[in-house]
Length: 294
Image 1 (spheres, rainbow, N blue to C red):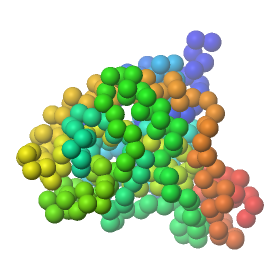
Image 2: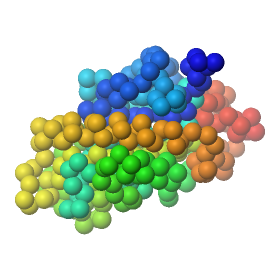
Image 3: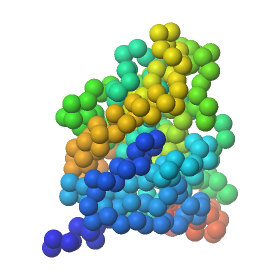
């Protein structure tokens, strides 16, 4: 019975971003899995292992060695791959800039909303003969978000719950005029990767929440230098230990039945009356029960 857990599917997925490629150091009974998808290859092999007695899957968003630009990440393949191996809940760990004085470098933000300012990313699984419109008014799983915030507090971190993550295309940082504009919009933090992740996770009926690690004040702050890669990396290194502890604390609370509605996001979303055979085959993992009815 001691090895029975290795046979279980990883129901929790962690997508790690800048500076977090070694998150899997905390795992035991580790294996790498190369997952094929109809949308191409994910950013890297998925690392699967036990964390606090729970089977967890870790995926390096930019690939190990940070070799994939935010615009070049195959977001569809990443989310599909995690769904394919059994993941039901995703914790997205991301470096962000702050758009508010109160959200200081080193703090953690658990945003409840997103603003999409990306320009050239595939952000839906449903094309080529299939149309689906999922509800995205509340794009974050409330259960995962709440438990992540509690895990930050238990790990002695400073956490801000709620607010909006504004996602830009990148890879350049914002101009000062853009940074000031985004503050006028009321956005709290700024990053380059969590959209279309959140959209695709909802389409895949997965729970999704972000643990955003504040690294800088973007470039709007009058008393701070404009954001530099060096400053971001320095703060990132300080955040890594905290993020590992938060995940270790949160994971055991995220097992079992899901109390949210994320798992039924497609129930009334697919409006195509007759799905073409090729599309039915390509999307079988996502459509499941709906594919048989059309």
